[in-house]
Amino acid sequence: MARTNRRWLLAERPTGMVGPEHFRFDQVPVESPGPGQVLVRSLWLSLDPANRAWLAPTPTYKSAVQPDEVMHGFALGRVEESGDPRLAPGDIVSGMLGWQDYATLPVAEVHKEPAGRDPRHAMGVLGVTGLTAYFGLLEVGQPKVGETVVVSAAGGAVGSIVGQLAKLAGCRVVGLAGGPEKCRWLEQELGFDVAIDYRAGNLRRAMKAACPDGIDVYFDNVGGDILATALFLMNERGRIVACGNLSQYNAERPAPGPMGVPGLVVVKRLRIEGFIVTDYYDRRAAAEAALTRLLASGQLKAVEDVVEGLEKAPATLVELFQGRNRGKLLIKVA
Ligand code: NDP
Image (cartoon, rainbow, N blue to C red; front, side, top):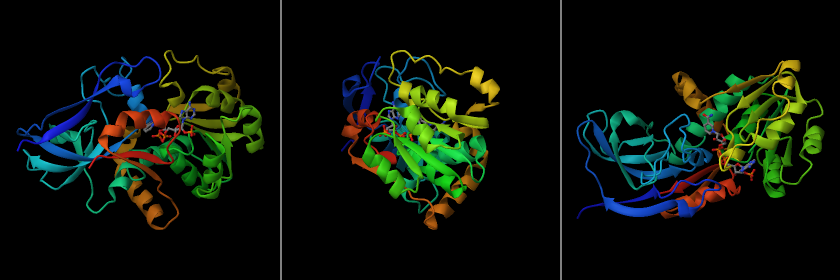
């Protein structure tokens, strides 16, 4: 019997907050791979703030999703059929498989995962998430022992790892997260020195109290008000790691840039540096090995939030922006 591919298409481009109404579910027969292609059964789908950014009409670091196209998404799956000797049925691969049960795509567009790795770790702490935290903090942020590191979206996928790595680097670590429970969890379970509930109001006073010696490294996942506040507390020669801008991904029009740029940047000799994790992929194997060691020794905790069912992808993406997740948010597709 012909296999069916269930998939989510972009129905309509959102202008403000993304919602389930912007997607359409359909089913089509599974496509067999041609020469140089593979057919991959999706197993785990990563939900990321960037999914929303890819729905804007302008391309980001990758092309924008077009209406009636399968929603783009990073996923891990199992090769079912192969039209290329480099991959065989049963191999585990990751790549832009999209929000669907099956993807038929060129072999060159997938990455073969090492055997024996927990697939949730491959999508989280040992995948894009962990590598983003690792290279962003250590290469761009260059934290030194005794310095103060602040990270926003601290309870999320990247932030929860940044905070732990900064502690391991000997820094004082302050996280920003939504709600008292998430903050308690960051302090008690993940070892943050202080976690600030950024929704509780009076952000500037709270950040000042949490950073009596100022901020040396601000790992910015969100942009917006938190970036604006952090800028005023930066120490001379401080580094701002521009990792993401998730407070603006659903905005109809991005908020204007923060006050103090360029004034404070000049006076305090700040470095604000953006990066994309793939910039560092020539050193991917060494970073994966380092993260694997930290995980195995128990010095680093992997945190994953798993939702079952491809059909829940749109609603779960909305919940991501409402702060539902602790750590890496994944959809278990099969
Ligand atoms: P998260 O797991 O952190 O998910 C989003 C979290 O952000 C939510 O749980 C929520 O937690 C918090 N949040 C939502 N809205 C806001 C807001 N308006 N202000 C502050 N916090 C908010 O996502 P990731 O860890 O996957 O991604 C973090 C950032 O890293 C994103 O900006 C992403 O685009 C970027 N990124 C960059 C890469 C690169 O190569 N440069 C690669 C991968 C990711 P709560 O509100 O409860 O705190």
